[in-house]
Image 1 (cartoon, rainbow, N blue to C red):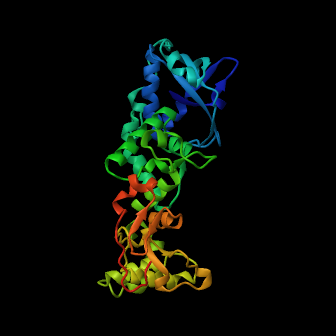
Image 2 (image 1 turned 60 degrees about the vertical axis):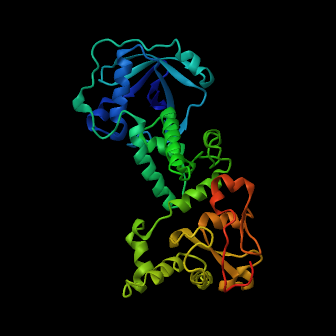
Image 3 (image 1 turned 90 degrees about the horizontal axis):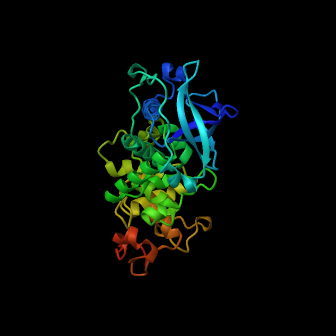
Length: 364
């Protein structure tokens, strides 16, 4: 399946440029150039089911281009390839095939062999891209972890643009990456990939991994891959540690500084510091000690607007657990026992029944 551009389709002649020879010579879009050459070589030789999905570029003069839309009424069958007088490779476009009928159509459709030898030599390959989506998965994973550090999301088009993938290779890459996370008992990091309009994940997240709350899964990702000081830029690290550089052995004080100096409402700084120290610098449920993954949560019935900002007014929780606590999905009983909603047991079952011991405080 080739990804092509609507501004390169000559509708009357039914010819679609699939490789600009100037791009090949100058090695624009190098991440996907080699993959495109391999695909075109297979189509040039013929006897394969060739199709293209046509995209619209945000700026047709940009390199690399950014996709803003796909033609969504189907894909085009490719009849054969040829080289035009400019040296570009063009495809003769056949019928449009609805996605619902693609599998059946592919059983009989074959792109015809082109005339002559394939015109792109090995010297025009960039050496920077791959011919398999599988080899791009580590780079996709590393990039998504960076997105986690910023507590962000990306769209399907963002991933396709960055890694030169079309829809089906992207779907396969997401599936494989998701299963790698599942096997490693990690949150499913592909929950960060969302639809540009709804900002939600596709149905595939539930169908394949039985995750019915993508927002909650993203919170799990943010907590699991929370950045450390080593991940942060120098501009962020410097103010966090500047007041404690003279005390390098006082690890707890350094962690307390990192925690309390995160940007918050001014009145929260004292509260955050008090709760952090009262809880020994660790989540009272999970035991997590990474400051950037922790939040000072107001206990139920306490409100910072009413001046409830003492240590006894809060508990220290990992960010995802704080979210669950505020939503009532995680509760702490009067005896200090953690009680989880049934919907969370498959993902957070290890915390169900944990006893929270806060001897200095009144009963929770």
